[in-house]
Structure formats: C-alpha cells, structure tokens
Length: 314
Ligand SMILES: Nc1ncnc2c1ncn2[C@@H]1O[C@H](COP(=O)(O)OP(=O)(O)OP(=O)(O)O)[C@@H](O)[C@H]1O
Image 1: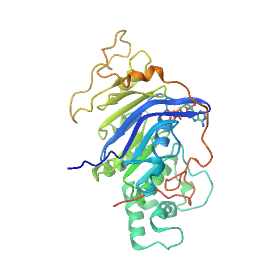
Image 2: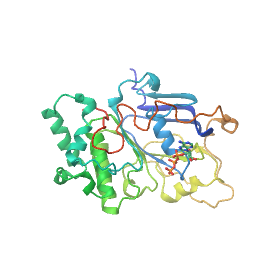
Image 3: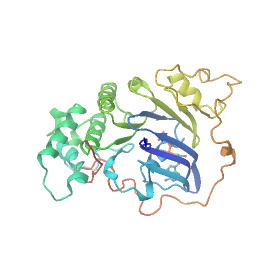
Image 4: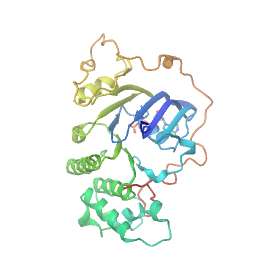
C-alpha cells in the first residue's frame, strides 16, 4: 500500500539571504495531521524555514516538497495556509472582520464570482473557531493585536487549507488572546489539520504539540518529542550539540539530555544530523529574488482586507 507523502519535507536545504547562508543543511519533514512547534532563538532561521517551506523563498541547494511535489512545480497553493509574522491591520483599509475573513475565500471562488452560501458558511465557521463571531461587523482596526491575529487565522481557515504555517501568532498577544488562539489551534488539530507553528514559548499550546523542532544558527538543533521550556532553553545554547531524535511514539518520555543547560558534558547525541553539516559552505550571495514577495499567490498575507487567498480543502 502506498503511503501518503509528507505534507512538507525539506531535504538538506541551504537558504541564502543578503549574501549569507541563513539556513544550512536543513532536513525536516512534517506528516499529515502533525502539530509541530518550530522554536529557536531570534535570528535562528524559523521564519526563513517557514517561508522556504511555503515556496516564498527559494533554496540555494537542496529540495523542498509539498505533498510530494517539488515546490517549484507545486501549483495547488490553495492547500497552504500561511499567516506571516507581525502581520497586522495597520494598512488602514476600513474593512470589516467578515470582509477580511471572506477575502480568504478568493482562491476558492475566484475574484469576481460573488460569495455563495458555501463561502458564507466557511467564513462563519472560521469566525466561530477563533471566537470572533460577535465581532464580524466591526472594522479590523478596532480590534486588539491579538484579536487581529485571530482574524488572520480565520482568514486562512476560511480557505480550508490542508496545512497551516503560523509564524509567531502569539507574539505580543495578551494571555486571554493567547488562550483563544490556542483553543482555535486545538480545534483545527482535532479536525486533522497539519500545523507548523513558530512559537517562542510552549506555554498555551503545550498540550497540543506532537513534536518540537528547535533551530539554532540556521540549523536544526533538535527534532523530536515535545520539550519542556527548560529543555527548549537548553537546546538554544551553543554548548549543546546538534541533536535530532528519532521520532518516538507520542507519549514517550521527554528526552533528558537537554535538561541541564549548564551541563559541561552534554550526553552524546543520539543521531548526528547530517555528518557533513560542519562543512556547509556559503554559496553565491543572493537576496530574496524578484517575484518572491512575502505573499505568494495562494498564500495568505498581511491583513489588508483584500489580498488574502490562502488555500483550501474540506
Ligand atoms: N531579507 C533578509 N536579508 C538578509 N538577512 C536576512 C533577511 N531576512 C532575515 N535575515 C537574517 O536571516 C537570519 C534568520 O532570520 P529569521 O527571520 O528566519 O529568524 P527567526 O528565527 O525567525 O527570528 P525571530 O525569532 O527574530 O523572528 C537572521 O540572521 C536574519 O537577520
């Protein structure tokens, strides 16, 4: 029996920005239905990895596959939902919450066809999931930053994508909104969505995560079972060797070798991640090339009330 390919898989990718390799030899794979927390210190390459996974940035070497298809040939972008980092409603467009969420349906219904009942239902449901049904008629600019993040998630959700890439939706969001976001993500996970969530602290989403990937200095420092906050902290530290765990069954014990951030002799790593890592070399410089904007066709971008076109299923 043939097994479904991973939702997204990178194979030994290097990504260069501003003439510098900001991702080096990164190989990660996310299966359908997984909830993956992508963590790591500032500048470690989390956003770059997410943007490369969605096809917004090209890899200088290595391959990225979405649903088994090389990203360069992947056309079904409506299957991807992406909420970029620090997206907000600051464009000043006086759109209502419902209008912004409806814009997420464009990839499904086309720009000119009027919204049908299925569109309205999807929008209503998306607003329910993020707990903003009662704010549908309000202008987005009247909402708090955390509520606006929930509108963005609703917009991605309305497009009914198969996979959500969410880049730090919790950043700068107050605790009640973090909890509301976590509840929304929990509902999505329950429905079988695949979720890649960039997050700084495990906090509110701790119970939802199937797996943690920790980036450090452009490489994967850890890929395995969910970590505690202390273990994440340890994985950030340069003294701890890069470690990629076997993907152990859900419910297995936390790895203990990351428990002691100050441990002078950390336990031997269980698997060296790509032994050639240390020889990764900088390649010809190029920045984000023309045509690679932050918002690719079919991918939800900053909240501006009009351009959204994430993708869809269900
Ligand atoms: N357009 C760019 N040109 C040059 N360098 C860039 C560009 N964008 C990001 N970088 C660099 O790439 C590295 C990785 O950045 P990235 O935003 O992926 O990190 P991050 O882990 O998401 O950080 P944060 O947690 O602060 O969002 C950083 O050193 C950053 O300065």
